[in-house]
Image (tube, rainbow, N blue to C red; front, side, top):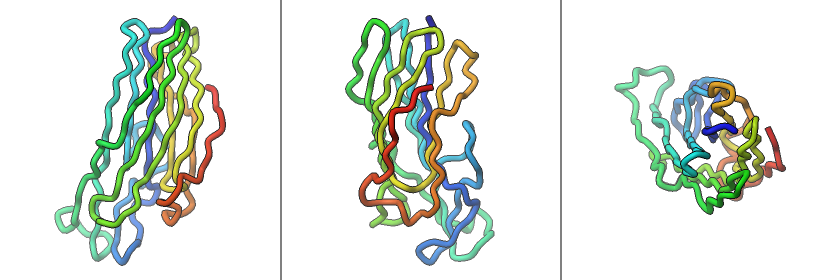
Length: 184
């Protein structure tokens, strides 16, 4: 039986720069990868020996400018609040732990911005492979990814879920993307 599992919930904007709301915005400029830039990063660490669930909540820097390709010192930048990212309803069982993960973060540079939202129900088994089952929902933008890292494989990240957003216009409103039960 393994001792620790890390589940990473991450959102990112794949474009390096994009024009939106009359300004040039800086994205994360990447595809799916465990350690890439992010809009939000929510790490949940499960310790089966101590029966603890800890979290680390991070948001990336949001920057905009009136023109493309300007130096960072000429951009307006801000950081979203991570207070609306949480782990709730933790229940320990002899062979697994279950919990609910929720996240919401707004663009700090647009007062009327819709937040990016996600929520997942997660079960992590305390077995040979620390199998993870998750289901939930999220907004259609930006891109979403979930990884599992467990001590049984030296914390090598294994992708559990990936959503490739087609448009930032799918941000806001209801969480329209349903994630069926996935096990990995």
